[in-house]
Image: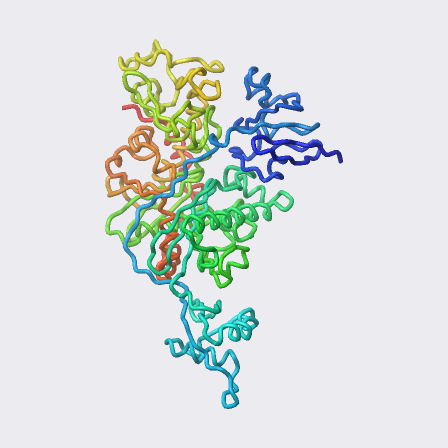
Length: 616
């Protein structure tokens, strides 16, 4: 089959692409990180690239999604454009692809209790009087440190290392011990340094925290987009890719392991330490990301009754997962609850101590999948609401993730105002701004309860008169203009269309319905909830007032909302620094009662009602 040269700029990256393959496939082969919000299905129109050489005829879908001016300038969609000759492709400025990733979190008091310990020992040398084996003499030295001889274990790899390590260290060694297993032997006495990394692997982003396992001190924080976005923006896309594409699972696992190794390298460089000083890694992830990271096919999650392969916590050798840390290192996988309520939710519950609360609290982690938990020390119910990609920009006309160039908040003052991430000219609108924009339209009476944008002559609120020029027509329907083409960084107008509002209604309806179902299941009213805890990136960037105005969160709870940052990251840190907290995570996961929304009586009615807006 013919091959063609595809030259990507900036970066001077050359890759040979098979005739008929897409630019997306060529970009994946080249190892280029690029955000395919719809998973490369040609439905979002966000993977715009500029072809400066070897321009091809646009396909019908590109003609529908791109303006004539863009097509004339060589703009194409990477997931739809097929390679039929040598090409030069200009990618968006890398600064525009930089994302805001939430790395902060609320902390709480706990006792540090490391999973692994390092002890310095002097092993008796063999002699004519002492013919004991290396292993026997090593155990005798460790027993003096308080361990029981009968419980000590070793591995074949340690036994293989033992003669050489003892000889070169003159029988003065440091043993790395996990529980009663000797997992490592070192020639010197580096017991003063023992580090670990806690990871929150999200569908969209990965955040890692480098910690001192003795003191709990945070040494550095690193983050990146999850490179699996090249194979699909949401969980369902990844499930399908892993299950149906050739070597799909291997590609997805390889991408996330490589990303974590790169984050480890970045973290140790920031802290001026080495990879070899890292002895533990904890992982919090949703069930799909959890399975893919482990190389477990997640197919069973995608079909009824949506069960995971594994729910229990797991401890593995880091070498089994090809993670580049100390050879004695362990990986601590937090437990899952259900197919779509995973270890990240367990980590959030661990951080918030919901199971110890006297008061009933509502915990919401909003993303493509919204995980919701409601409860107290009495009982906890949890569910997963399929909010879809609206909050992350996919399927929104001018939507994008929370990256540089995104409008992140909208203000209805004497005139329309907005803020832009990174300042500069806007390139699109992210989820938090979409909420603000629609909430303002509701308060002004420009939207009715069904989400329809009213014509100017239908408006009754005098305050709405100020925004007459923003009311426009788009594809035969009403739309609200946020930024004219001349004011944007890409020469395209940014607006909120009827379709955008419908997407938001579906997303907010899913979360609101989940909250309502959990309250009904628990047998409480809205006023019984004492606090609402918002976790995750989107939950911490949104304006709580806007969320309540559109009905994402019950309006009665607005004064009770508290942002708790990346609580999943906090839970991962707790599980890494304390073996007691890791054990507690198992108890929490086993105690949560999962509610399957799809099988709940009247769910369809509740969801339908929840998509409507309340007009005050």
